[in-house]
Image (tube, rainbow, N blue to C red; front, side, top):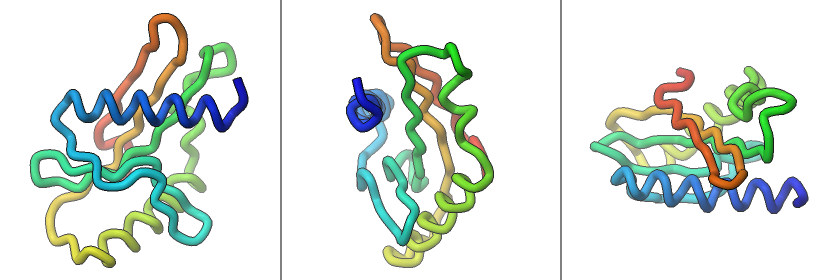
Length: 115
């Protein structure tokens, strides 16, 4: 399975996971300049920016370990643009959804992953 298919499958699964937890999905693959936010959701009056990382195995580390400072900086820049565009005045949060695509699929939802 190529990287795009792995990413798409992981994002589809992430949306199902978040919706089952009561999240309202607002955007998927929101782009600003060279940054992309995989999922933007609303949960308990907070705007949640979710980075989804998917792998077939943890042989080379865990998916969430690939979220480095450069990625965080881009996510925050895109989030700032989104917040400004909709004039959001309430709480925000950055989450990571780490997904291992196997039988059965496994996931780890890291809330407040970074600031």
